[in-house]
Length: 463
Image 1 (spheres, one colour):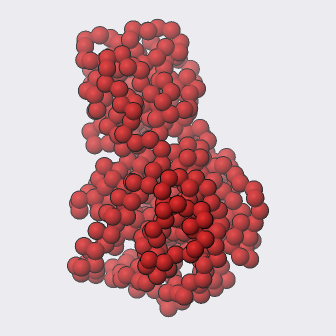
Image 2 (spheres, one colour):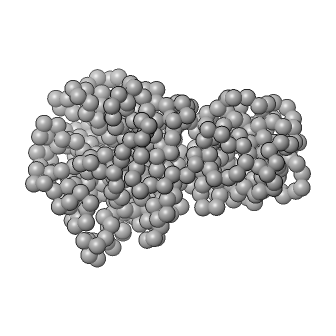
Image 3 (tube, one colour):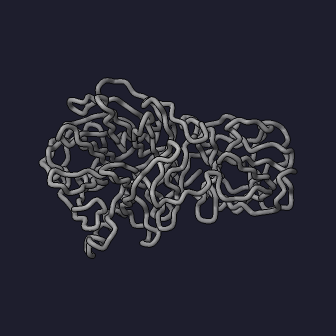
Protein backbone atom coordinates (compact mmCIF):
# COMPACT_ATOMS: atom_id res chain seq x y z
CA UNK A 1 0.00 0.00 0.00
CA UNK A 2 0.98 3.62 -0.17
CA UNK A 3 3.27 5.32 2.29
CA UNK A 4 0.51 7.54 3.66
CA UNK A 5 -3.20 6.85 3.90
CA UNK A 6 -5.77 9.26 5.29
CA UNK A 7 -5.33 12.16 7.68
CA UNK A 8 -3.11 11.17 10.57
CA UNK A 9 -1.68 13.28 13.40
CA UNK A 10 1.99 12.45 12.70
CA UNK A 11 2.58 14.93 9.83
CA UNK A 12 1.12 17.77 11.89
CA UNK A 13 3.17 16.79 14.93
CA UNK A 14 6.28 16.83 12.77
CA UNK A 15 5.24 20.27 11.56
CA UNK A 16 4.96 21.51 15.13
CA UNK A 17 8.44 20.19 15.88
CA UNK A 18 9.78 21.81 12.71
CA UNK A 19 8.04 25.05 13.58
CA UNK A 20 9.43 25.26 17.11
CA UNK A 21 12.93 24.32 16.02
CA UNK A 22 12.88 27.03 13.38
CA UNK A 23 11.34 29.59 15.75
CA UNK A 24 13.92 28.88 18.45
CA UNK A 25 16.73 29.16 15.93
CA UNK A 26 15.42 32.42 14.54
CA UNK A 27 14.52 33.90 17.91
CA UNK A 28 17.96 33.14 19.32
CA UNK A 29 19.41 35.11 16.44
CA UNK A 30 18.51 38.71 15.69
CA UNK A 31 14.75 38.78 15.21
CA UNK A 32 15.06 42.06 13.36
CA UNK A 33 17.02 40.43 10.53
CA UNK A 34 15.11 37.21 10.20
CA UNK A 35 11.96 36.00 8.49
CA UNK A 36 9.34 35.30 11.17
CA UNK A 37 8.67 31.60 11.85
CA UNK A 38 5.15 30.31 11.37
CA UNK A 39 3.04 27.29 10.52
CA UNK A 40 -0.68 27.58 9.73
CA UNK A 41 -0.76 31.34 10.37
CA UNK A 42 -3.88 33.37 11.02
CA UNK A 43 -4.63 36.46 8.97
CA UNK A 44 -2.75 39.56 10.11
CA UNK A 45 -4.70 41.67 12.61
CA UNK A 46 -3.96 44.92 14.44
CA UNK A 47 -4.14 45.27 18.21
CA UNK A 48 -5.53 48.19 20.18
CA UNK A 49 -1.97 49.52 20.68
CA UNK A 50 -1.34 49.52 16.92
CA UNK A 51 0.92 46.46 16.76
CA UNK A 52 0.34 43.82 14.08
CA UNK A 53 -0.28 40.26 15.26
CA UNK A 54 -0.19 36.75 13.83
CA UNK A 55 -1.42 33.64 15.66
CA UNK A 56 -0.11 30.27 14.59
CA UNK A 57 0.06 26.56 15.38
CA UNK A 58 1.78 25.94 18.68
CA UNK A 59 1.59 25.29 22.40
CA UNK A 60 -1.27 27.29 23.91
CA UNK A 61 -1.89 28.99 20.52
CA UNK A 62 1.45 30.62 19.68
CA UNK A 63 1.46 34.36 18.93
CA UNK A 64 3.85 37.02 17.69
CA UNK A 65 3.61 40.70 16.84
CA UNK A 66 5.45 43.51 15.08
CA UNK A 67 5.36 47.28 15.04
CA UNK A 68 4.95 47.16 11.26
CA UNK A 69 2.97 45.10 8.75
CA UNK A 70 6.15 43.67 7.20
CA UNK A 71 7.14 41.99 10.49
CA UNK A 72 10.73 43.22 10.37
CA UNK A 73 10.87 43.48 14.17
CA UNK A 74 8.65 40.61 15.24
CA UNK A 75 8.58 39.42 18.83
CA UNK A 76 7.06 36.45 20.62
CA UNK A 77 3.89 37.19 22.62
CA UNK A 78 2.22 35.26 25.42
CA UNK A 79 0.05 32.39 24.12
CA UNK A 80 -3.73 32.55 24.31
CA UNK A 81 -3.80 29.75 26.89
CA UNK A 82 -0.98 29.33 29.44
CA UNK A 83 1.38 26.59 28.29
CA UNK A 84 0.35 23.23 29.72
CA UNK A 85 -3.28 24.26 30.22
CA UNK A 86 -6.31 24.19 27.99
CA UNK A 87 -10.09 24.38 28.32
CA UNK A 88 -11.38 21.21 29.98
CA UNK A 89 -14.22 20.70 27.48
CA UNK A 90 -11.67 19.71 24.83
CA UNK A 91 -11.03 16.41 26.62
CA UNK A 92 -14.65 15.41 25.96
CA UNK A 93 -14.13 15.57 22.19
CA UNK A 94 -10.42 14.94 21.57
CA UNK A 95 -8.49 11.93 22.80
CA UNK A 96 -4.89 12.49 23.83
CA UNK A 97 -4.87 16.27 23.42
CA UNK A 98 -1.61 17.73 24.73
CA UNK A 99 -2.04 21.49 24.47
CA UNK A 100 -0.78 22.01 20.92
CA UNK A 101 -3.41 24.03 19.06
CA UNK A 102 -3.61 24.04 15.28
CA UNK A 103 -4.30 26.69 12.67
CA UNK A 104 -6.02 29.55 14.53
CA UNK A 105 -7.70 32.51 12.87
CA UNK A 106 -8.99 35.76 14.33
CA UNK A 107 -11.39 38.59 13.49
CA UNK A 108 -12.51 41.81 15.19
CA UNK A 109 -16.25 42.21 15.70
CA UNK A 110 -17.21 45.60 17.17
CA UNK A 111 -14.11 45.78 19.30
CA UNK A 112 -14.20 42.14 20.39
CA UNK A 113 -11.44 39.86 19.08
CA UNK A 114 -12.77 36.41 18.24
CA UNK A 115 -10.12 33.73 17.90
CA UNK A 116 -11.10 30.35 16.44
CA UNK A 117 -8.71 27.50 17.15
CA UNK A 118 -8.58 23.79 16.41
CA UNK A 119 -7.40 20.93 18.55
CA UNK A 120 -6.61 17.34 17.67
CA UNK A 121 -4.96 14.41 19.39
CA UNK A 122 -4.98 10.69 18.72
CA UNK A 123 -6.97 9.51 15.72
CA UNK A 124 -9.44 11.50 13.69
CA UNK A 125 -11.77 13.23 16.22
CA UNK A 126 -11.05 16.96 16.53
CA UNK A 127 -12.80 20.12 17.60
CA UNK A 128 -12.89 23.85 16.92
CA UNK A 129 -13.33 26.30 19.79
CA UNK A 130 -13.67 30.05 20.29
CA UNK A 131 -11.91 32.46 22.65
CA UNK A 132 -12.63 36.19 22.98
CA UNK A 133 -10.78 39.26 24.27
CA UNK A 134 -10.75 43.04 23.96
CA UNK A 135 -6.96 43.06 23.65
CA UNK A 136 -4.91 40.56 21.65
CA UNK A 137 -2.47 40.39 24.55
CA UNK A 138 -5.31 39.02 26.69
CA UNK A 139 -6.78 38.08 28.98
CA UNK A 140 -8.73 35.62 26.80
CA UNK A 141 -12.06 34.10 27.78
CA UNK A 142 -12.81 30.71 26.30
CA UNK A 143 -16.33 30.42 24.88
CA UNK A 144 -16.23 26.69 24.31
CA UNK A 145 -17.06 24.41 21.40
CA UNK A 146 -18.07 25.67 17.97
CA UNK A 147 -17.99 22.42 15.98
CA UNK A 148 -16.57 18.92 16.47
CA UNK A 149 -16.04 15.95 14.20
CA UNK A 150 -13.46 13.83 12.46
CA UNK A 151 -10.60 16.23 11.84
CA UNK A 152 -12.57 19.43 12.38
CA UNK A 153 -9.54 21.65 11.87
CA UNK A 154 -8.36 24.86 10.15
CA UNK A 155 -11.19 27.30 10.99
CA UNK A 156 -11.53 30.50 8.96
CA UNK A 157 -14.31 33.02 9.73
CA UNK A 158 -15.79 35.54 7.28
CA UNK A 159 -17.82 38.63 8.14
CA UNK A 160 -20.11 39.50 5.24
CA UNK A 161 -22.18 42.42 6.40
CA UNK A 162 -24.71 41.14 8.91
CA UNK A 163 -23.91 37.53 7.99
CA UNK A 164 -21.05 35.71 9.68
CA UNK A 165 -19.67 32.40 8.43
CA UNK A 166 -17.09 29.77 9.33
CA UNK A 167 -15.40 27.37 6.94
CA UNK A 168 -13.01 24.64 8.01
CA UNK A 169 -11.06 21.75 6.52
CA UNK A 170 -12.00 18.14 7.09
CA UNK A 171 -9.38 15.80 5.68
CA UNK A 172 -11.83 12.93 5.68
CA UNK A 173 -14.90 14.72 4.33
CA UNK A 174 -13.59 17.84 2.62
CA UNK A 175 -14.27 21.52 3.28
CA UNK A 176 -17.41 22.52 5.18
CA UNK A 177 -19.28 25.74 5.91
CA UNK A 178 -21.65 26.86 8.66
CA UNK A 179 -23.29 30.16 9.54
CA UNK A 180 -22.33 31.91 12.77
CA UNK A 181 -24.47 33.90 15.17
CA UNK A 182 -23.08 37.46 14.94
CA UNK A 183 -23.92 38.13 18.58
CA UNK A 184 -21.71 35.41 20.05
CA UNK A 185 -19.62 33.91 17.22
CA UNK A 186 -21.02 30.40 17.76
CA UNK A 187 -22.97 28.25 15.28
CA UNK A 188 -26.26 29.89 14.31
CA UNK A 189 -28.01 26.60 13.57
CA UNK A 190 -27.32 23.00 12.57
CA UNK A 191 -27.11 23.66 8.80
CA UNK A 192 -23.90 22.62 7.05
CA UNK A 193 -22.73 22.96 3.46
CA UNK A 194 -20.10 20.75 1.80
CA UNK A 195 -17.97 23.02 -0.38
CA UNK A 196 -15.17 20.68 -1.48
CA UNK A 197 -15.01 16.87 -1.15
CA UNK A 198 -12.03 14.64 -0.49
CA UNK A 199 -8.58 15.09 0.97
CA UNK A 200 -8.21 18.86 1.12
CA UNK A 201 -7.79 21.33 3.97
CA UNK A 202 -6.90 24.85 5.16
CA UNK A 203 -9.79 26.78 3.59
CA UNK A 204 -10.10 30.56 3.55
CA UNK A 205 -13.03 32.64 2.29
CA UNK A 206 -12.61 36.13 0.89
CA UNK A 207 -15.20 38.41 -0.70
CA UNK A 208 -14.41 40.89 -3.46
CA UNK A 209 -17.21 42.62 -5.34
CA UNK A 210 -20.00 40.17 -6.11
CA UNK A 211 -17.79 37.08 -5.79
CA UNK A 212 -16.83 34.87 -2.89
CA UNK A 213 -13.38 33.31 -3.31
CA UNK A 214 -12.60 29.98 -1.68
CA UNK A 215 -8.91 29.19 -1.19
CA UNK A 216 -7.85 25.74 -0.01
CA UNK A 217 -4.96 23.28 -0.04
CA UNK A 218 -4.24 20.25 -2.14
CA UNK A 219 -1.33 17.93 -1.43
CA UNK A 220 0.27 17.27 1.96
CA UNK A 221 2.02 19.61 4.36
CA UNK A 222 4.61 19.14 7.01
CA UNK A 223 7.52 17.46 5.22
CA UNK A 224 9.79 20.46 4.76
CA UNK A 225 11.11 20.86 1.24
CA UNK A 226 9.38 17.62 0.24
CA UNK A 227 5.90 18.96 1.11
CA UNK A 228 3.41 18.78 -1.76
CA UNK A 229 1.08 21.55 -0.52
CA UNK A 230 -0.18 24.02 -3.11
CA UNK A 231 -3.04 26.50 -2.89
CA UNK A 232 -5.96 26.59 -5.30
CA UNK A 233 -8.94 28.93 -5.60
CA UNK A 234 -12.47 28.87 -6.96
CA UNK A 235 -15.16 31.54 -6.94
CA UNK A 236 -18.94 31.75 -6.64
CA UNK A 237 -21.64 34.39 -6.47
CA UNK A 238 -23.14 32.43 -3.54
CA UNK A 239 -21.18 31.72 -0.40
CA UNK A 240 -22.61 28.20 -0.34
CA UNK A 241 -21.30 27.54 -3.85
CA UNK A 242 -20.81 25.93 -6.24
CA UNK A 243 -17.27 27.29 -6.63
CA UNK A 244 -15.76 27.18 -10.12
CA UNK A 245 -12.19 27.63 -11.33
CA UNK A 246 -10.99 29.76 -14.25
CA UNK A 247 -11.81 26.97 -16.71
CA UNK A 248 -15.35 26.62 -15.34
CA UNK A 249 -14.67 23.35 -13.51
CA UNK A 250 -16.37 22.92 -10.13
CA UNK A 251 -14.22 22.29 -7.07
CA UNK A 252 -16.77 19.58 -6.31
CA UNK A 253 -15.27 17.66 -9.23
CA UNK A 254 -11.56 18.26 -8.73
CA UNK A 255 -11.45 21.82 -10.06
CA UNK A 256 -9.40 24.66 -8.63
CA UNK A 257 -7.07 27.20 -10.24
CA UNK A 258 -3.56 27.33 -8.81
CA UNK A 259 -3.06 30.43 -6.65
CA UNK A 260 0.23 29.49 -4.97
CA UNK A 261 2.33 26.79 -6.68
CA UNK A 262 4.07 24.01 -4.79
CA UNK A 263 7.46 25.48 -5.67
CA UNK A 264 8.51 29.03 -6.44
CA UNK A 265 12.21 29.42 -5.78
CA UNK A 266 12.84 29.23 -2.03
CA UNK A 267 9.08 29.17 -1.34
CA UNK A 268 8.00 25.52 -1.10
CA UNK A 269 4.68 24.01 0.04
CA UNK A 270 2.81 27.30 0.72
CA UNK A 271 -0.35 27.06 2.79
CA UNK A 272 -2.96 28.62 5.07
CA UNK A 273 -3.54 31.91 3.30
CA UNK A 274 -5.15 34.85 5.05
CA UNK A 275 -5.87 38.45 4.15
CA UNK A 276 -5.77 41.19 6.78
CA UNK A 277 -4.47 44.73 7.24
CA UNK A 278 -3.88 44.93 3.48
CA UNK A 279 -1.53 41.96 3.53
CA UNK A 280 -1.66 38.41 2.20
CA UNK A 281 0.01 35.98 4.59
CA UNK A 282 0.81 32.27 4.47
CA UNK A 283 3.45 29.83 5.60
CA UNK A 284 6.12 28.24 3.41
CA UNK A 285 9.02 25.84 3.81
CA UNK A 286 12.24 27.69 3.13
CA UNK A 287 14.32 25.97 0.46
CA UNK A 288 17.25 28.14 1.52
CA UNK A 289 17.01 27.07 5.17
CA UNK A 290 16.53 23.27 5.25
CA UNK A 291 12.76 23.54 4.95
CA UNK A 292 12.16 25.67 8.06
CA UNK A 293 8.53 26.81 8.29
CA UNK A 294 8.26 30.58 7.93
CA UNK A 295 5.78 33.39 7.37
CA UNK A 296 5.56 35.05 3.97
CA UNK A 297 3.98 38.48 3.76
CA UNK A 298 2.95 39.99 0.44
CA UNK A 299 -0.15 41.60 -1.10
CA UNK A 300 -3.08 40.39 -3.17
CA UNK A 301 -4.80 42.14 -6.06
CA UNK A 302 -7.39 41.12 -8.66
CA UNK A 303 -6.95 40.73 -12.42
CA UNK A 304 -9.89 39.85 -14.67
CA UNK A 305 -11.88 38.87 -11.61
CA UNK A 306 -9.25 36.54 -10.13
CA UNK A 307 -6.84 37.00 -7.19
CA UNK A 308 -3.15 37.46 -7.89
CA UNK A 309 -0.44 37.18 -5.22
CA UNK A 310 2.33 39.75 -5.62
CA UNK A 311 5.77 38.29 -6.18
CA UNK A 312 4.50 34.79 -6.94
CA UNK A 313 5.45 33.09 -10.21
CA UNK A 314 2.74 30.77 -11.50
CA UNK A 315 3.56 27.86 -13.81
CA UNK A 316 1.20 26.86 -16.58
CA UNK A 317 -1.55 24.81 -14.93
CA UNK A 318 -1.03 22.01 -17.41
CA UNK A 319 2.69 21.88 -16.68
CA UNK A 320 5.60 23.08 -18.82
CA UNK A 321 5.91 20.00 -21.02
CA UNK A 322 5.67 20.50 -24.77
CA UNK A 323 3.08 18.54 -26.72
CA UNK A 324 4.53 15.33 -28.07
CA UNK A 325 5.10 11.64 -27.39
CA UNK A 326 6.56 10.51 -24.06
CA UNK A 327 7.38 7.46 -21.99
CA UNK A 328 6.23 7.97 -18.40
CA UNK A 329 8.40 6.41 -15.66
CA UNK A 330 7.44 6.09 -12.00
CA UNK A 331 9.87 7.52 -9.47
CA UNK A 332 9.31 4.78 -6.87
CA UNK A 333 9.46 1.67 -9.06
CA UNK A 334 11.33 2.83 -12.15
CA UNK A 335 8.62 1.14 -14.26
CA UNK A 336 6.65 2.69 -17.06
CA UNK A 337 3.00 3.52 -17.54
CA UNK A 338 1.77 0.78 -19.87
CA UNK A 339 -1.65 0.05 -21.37
CA UNK A 340 -0.77 -3.65 -21.75
CA UNK A 341 -1.78 -3.54 -25.41
CA UNK A 342 -5.47 -3.22 -24.51
CA UNK A 343 -7.79 -1.52 -26.97
CA UNK A 344 -11.19 -1.77 -25.24
CA UNK A 345 -12.96 1.09 -23.47
CA UNK A 346 -12.51 0.77 -19.71
CA UNK A 347 -9.40 -1.41 -19.91
CA UNK A 348 -6.95 -0.98 -17.03
CA UNK A 349 -3.66 0.88 -17.28
CA UNK A 350 -0.69 -0.69 -15.50
CA UNK A 351 3.10 -0.48 -15.11
CA UNK A 352 5.82 -2.58 -16.75
CA UNK A 353 9.58 -2.73 -16.93
CA UNK A 354 11.18 -0.64 -19.66
CA UNK A 355 10.68 -1.92 -23.19
CA UNK A 356 10.49 -0.65 -26.75
CA UNK A 357 6.78 -1.48 -26.89
CA UNK A 358 4.37 1.15 -28.15
CA UNK A 359 2.28 0.23 -25.09
CA UNK A 360 4.60 2.51 -23.10
CA UNK A 361 4.25 5.53 -25.39
CA UNK A 362 1.77 8.27 -24.61
CA UNK A 363 0.87 11.35 -26.64
CA UNK A 364 0.57 14.50 -24.51
CA UNK A 365 -1.58 17.41 -25.67
CA UNK A 366 -2.33 20.41 -23.47
CA UNK A 367 -5.10 22.94 -24.05
CA UNK A 368 -6.95 25.33 -21.76
CA UNK A 369 -4.67 24.50 -18.83
CA UNK A 370 -5.37 20.75 -18.83
CA UNK A 371 -3.62 17.84 -20.51
CA UNK A 372 -4.80 14.66 -22.23
CA UNK A 373 -2.73 11.50 -22.64
CA UNK A 374 -3.41 9.17 -25.59
CA UNK A 375 -2.00 5.67 -25.79
CA UNK A 376 -0.09 4.98 -29.01
CA UNK A 377 -1.34 1.39 -28.84
CA UNK A 378 -5.09 1.41 -29.36
CA UNK A 379 -5.43 5.20 -29.44
CA UNK A 380 -7.46 5.38 -26.21
CA UNK A 381 -7.09 8.17 -23.65
CA UNK A 382 -6.02 7.90 -20.03
CA UNK A 383 -9.32 8.15 -18.13
CA UNK A 384 -10.66 8.00 -14.57
CA UNK A 385 -13.69 6.05 -15.88
CA UNK A 386 -15.79 7.96 -13.34
CA UNK A 387 -13.99 6.36 -10.38
CA UNK A 388 -13.44 8.43 -7.26
CA UNK A 389 -12.41 6.04 -4.47
CA UNK A 390 -8.86 5.73 -3.17
CA UNK A 391 -7.36 2.56 -4.62
CA UNK A 392 -9.66 2.45 -7.65
CA UNK A 393 -8.14 1.48 -10.99
CA UNK A 394 -6.90 3.87 -13.66
CA UNK A 395 -8.38 3.13 -17.06
CA UNK A 396 -8.59 4.27 -20.68
CA UNK A 397 -11.46 5.29 -22.95
CA UNK A 398 -12.19 6.58 -26.43
CA UNK A 399 -11.72 10.32 -26.97
CA UNK A 400 -14.37 12.48 -25.29
CA UNK A 401 -14.70 15.99 -23.78
CA UNK A 402 -15.24 14.46 -20.32
CA UNK A 403 -13.24 15.83 -17.38
CA UNK A 404 -12.37 12.17 -16.74
CA UNK A 405 -9.75 12.51 -19.50
CA UNK A 406 -8.31 15.85 -18.39
CA UNK A 407 -5.25 16.03 -16.16
CA UNK A 408 -3.22 18.61 -14.27
CA UNK A 409 0.54 18.01 -14.31
CA UNK A 410 1.99 19.26 -11.02
CA UNK A 411 5.77 19.66 -11.03
CA UNK A 412 7.69 18.07 -8.13
CA UNK A 413 11.44 18.46 -8.55
CA UNK A 414 12.06 17.01 -12.03
CA UNK A 415 8.96 14.80 -11.79
CA UNK A 416 5.25 15.39 -12.26
CA UNK A 417 2.13 14.31 -10.42
CA UNK A 418 -0.72 13.40 -12.79
CA UNK A 419 -3.91 14.67 -11.13
CA UNK A 420 -7.33 13.94 -12.61
CA UNK A 421 -9.62 16.92 -13.19
CA UNK A 422 -12.76 14.94 -12.44
CA UNK A 423 -11.87 13.28 -9.12
CA UNK A 424 -8.92 15.44 -7.99
CA UNK A 425 -6.80 12.35 -7.30
CA UNK A 426 -3.34 11.40 -8.50
CA UNK A 427 -2.16 8.36 -10.43
CA UNK A 428 -0.30 6.13 -7.97
CA UNK A 429 1.38 2.73 -8.05
CA UNK A 430 -0.37 1.82 -4.80
CA UNK A 431 2.99 0.61 -3.55
CA UNK A 432 2.98 -2.25 -6.05
CA UNK A 433 6.24 -3.14 -7.77
CA UNK A 434 5.39 -5.99 -10.13
CA UNK A 435 5.05 -5.92 -13.90
CA UNK A 436 1.40 -5.66 -14.86
CA UNK A 437 0.27 -4.09 -11.59
CA UNK A 438 -2.75 -1.89 -12.29
CA UNK A 439 -2.30 1.79 -11.45
CA UNK A 440 -4.56 3.34 -8.82
CA UNK A 441 -6.08 6.66 -7.80
CA UNK A 442 -5.06 8.06 -4.42
CA UNK A 443 -5.36 11.40 -2.68
CA UNK A 444 -2.57 13.83 -3.52
CA UNK A 445 0.38 13.16 -1.15
CA UNK A 446 4.17 13.18 -0.83
CA UNK A 447 4.79 9.57 -1.87
CA UNK A 448 7.20 8.85 -4.75
CA UNK A 449 4.48 6.44 -5.92
CA UNK A 450 2.73 9.47 -7.40
CA UNK A 451 5.72 11.06 -9.11
CA UNK A 452 6.45 10.43 -12.77
CA UNK A 453 9.26 11.34 -15.13
CA UNK A 454 8.19 12.30 -18.67
CA UNK A 455 10.85 11.00 -21.06
CA UNK A 456 10.64 12.77 -24.41
CA UNK A 457 10.38 10.52 -27.47
CA UNK A 458 9.32 12.85 -30.28
CA UNK A 459 7.19 15.87 -31.12
CA UNK A 460 4.60 13.61 -32.81
CA UNK A 461 1.04 14.11 -31.56
CA UNK A 462 -0.58 11.35 -33.55
CA UNK A 463 -0.01 7.58 -33.20
